[in-house]
Length: 102
Image (cartoon, one colour):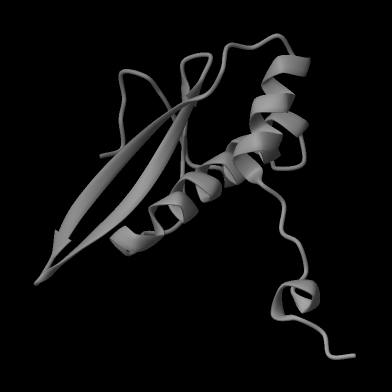
């Protein structure tokens, strides 16, 4: 029997859900996402950041508008790595609330 496309695709983690669960486990408030845009020629690039306890974690990449959820997933993955201690603080782009990168 032939495999369907969905059964042959590996499942990817839902970083936003994993981050929300990690925040609950640590008794942190729920993460707050922000969306930013940057006009680039005739197109607009989109990215995201997530705030947890006053720290802002930025997505690593910029995305097309139809992939906006990917920007939030990227920011959540960055924040989760820092919360779990699997990413060193120097390798993550984060900033205090009053020192926004954008």
